[in-house]
Amino acid sequence: MRVLIVVENLPVPLDRRVWQEACALRDAGHEVTVICPQMRGYTQAEERLEGIQIYRHWISGEARGIRGFLSEYLTALWGEFGCALKAWRRTGFDVIHLCNPPDLLFLVALPFKLLGRVRVVYDVHDLWPEMFEAKFGQRGLLYWAVRLAERCTLALADVVMATNQSVLSAVKLRGKKAIEDVFIVRTAPNQLNTTLPADPALKKGKPFLVGYIGVMGNADGVDYLVHAAHHIVHTRGRKDVQFLLMGSGPEHAEVQALRDSLKLTEDVDMPGRVSNEFLFTALKTMDLGVACDPINDYNDHCTMNKTLEYMAFSKAQVMFGTREGRYSAGDAALYVMENSAKKLGDAILELLDDTARREHMGQIGHERLSTELSWAQSTCELHRAYDRAMTR
Image 1 (cartoon, rainbow, N blue to C red):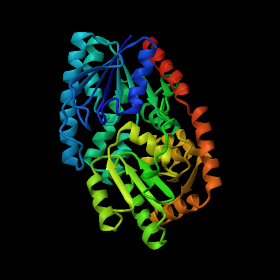
Image 2: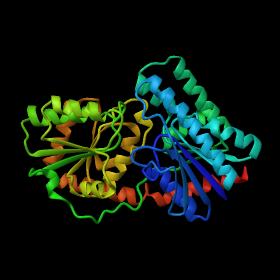
Image 3: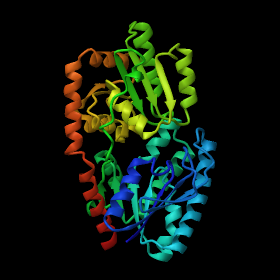
Image 4: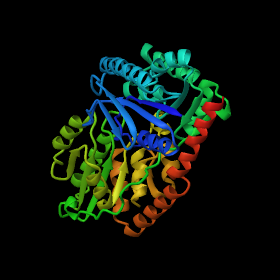
């Protein structure tokens, strides 16, 4: 089978979920091509990596405001359609696999389905209407356009894959999809190098290292963590905690400025996007992970990669108590049930001061990720979804 995967918001192999799906399909004997943007250091227009053909297109940039989003999505659609035509001319494809957000990718798939009878797999990473509302806090004309785009993508799809039960319930209701056409393919880290040694230098001579990994955008709540660090260092007077916030995104500069304004420059390191080796070393070194995505209707539906990566390295974590966050981490996390930086900081200290509890929670998380939430389980569902798409 010839598979074309289209992803707009991250390049591969940086997007771990998409890359793992591409590799799983390749390992099953399929010919896999991926279309993604040129960004975050991945700027080569064409590349063949580990047997997977990659086409990368220019994009206007990671947007912040509504005007920026329109520019980003229009340039992305133009680039994606051009790359899809190139893939069609060179090798053709039997399945086009759409990874949202956004839900505009049906425009790329539509002509190939109508004229080439290509099957469409819709891979719902995020509920785009909820994401839009979380970013902009309003329901105007553009919000309803986003809802329409979601409906169009659901109508076009032969099969839908959801990252978790919450997303599954939403797409079944909104798209009126039959139960046999919807699958849960959970995000789960795979083949992370957990054997690297810890690096005590990351702690800057302090007993504890608290870590964050992920995107720094206005929906990710990193500002809560910076304010929590201020509460820990300046209100609670704890000078024994170092913070390491890894990742980039449209709000990185603003978060960095907030850190400096709160006089936390020496206490909070923000290296931006880091290599896998640095990331895995940091995960090995940290005493506690934090998932500070605030509780809202969007984040309640999200399975966060950071949560699963902390579990892969047997690290306890503190998080705001989002619905899917609580399902993923189970007893491996301490939950803060309101969006409060002060309570987040107090919860961090509560776990830092209880080594035995932290270690036990880390073991629970690792075991959970190795069994119920493992990538091997998700790979089976991925193959079932593709079998269904080709036999409908």
